[in-house]
Image 1 (cartoon, protein in one colour):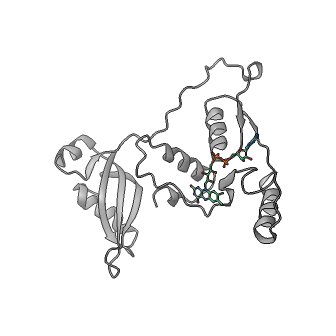
Image 2 (cartoon, rainbow, N blue to C red):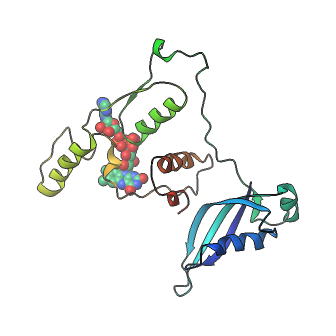
Image 3 (spheres, rainbow, N blue to C red):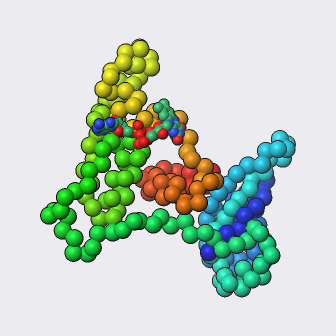
Length: 202
Ligand SMILES: Cc1cc2nc3c(=O)[nH]c(=O)nc-3n(C[C@H](O)[C@H](O)[C@H](O)COP(=O)(O)OP(=O)(O)OC[C@H]3O[C@@H](n4cnc5c(N)ncnc54)[C@H](O)[C@@H]3O)c2cc1C
């Protein structure tokens, strides 16, 4: 895969213009561009009257080596980094989970949730222990504090399914300083679970 950075287009550009800009930048034909995905999209809003979108795009092209060689001195056309998540291991094929001790995960906040998910993806059968209530119940209790000032010490913004972030306004990590691309794994799982795909690049 090839990563192209600094593709700049006007804020209200038609969707097709991104592909056209990519073709122009790479100097390849439409047929040679097999696929592309937006890795990042940011805004340059320094000029309020001409806001620009800046794209980082990963693409697959015919004869990738030749395309890269043709842009050898271009800092904005490089091989894409490998952002795949690396599991620390997987259970052997003959692993009989029913006969083995199961890993325990304590707490079902973001950390516990992903620890349990990754353990399950490794082939284990984690058990999650959560001291708080299910999300619907704790939502009522949390609003009880925020609206009526009634604190339930065991059911509040801190304790319960989803952890503390359940009541966040949804800000997500930007991925900018994440050399191991761990955030990518988190965001990819969110998308698999139904989140809008654009969280992967906005
Ligand atoms: C109102 C609010 C808004 C926020 N907004 C944002 C945001 O927009 N973006 C952002 O990135 N971050 C936000 N945060 C911070 C974010 O929520 C935390 O960084 C994150 O939840 C920490 O995750 P965690 O899994 O480590 O811990 P927690 O989310 O605290 O989860 C710990 C879990 O363990 C459970 N637990 C504790 N003790 C036990 C026990 N003895 N046995 C069993 N279970 C136990 C708790 O009930 C809880 O469910 C916000 C936090 C709050 C409170």
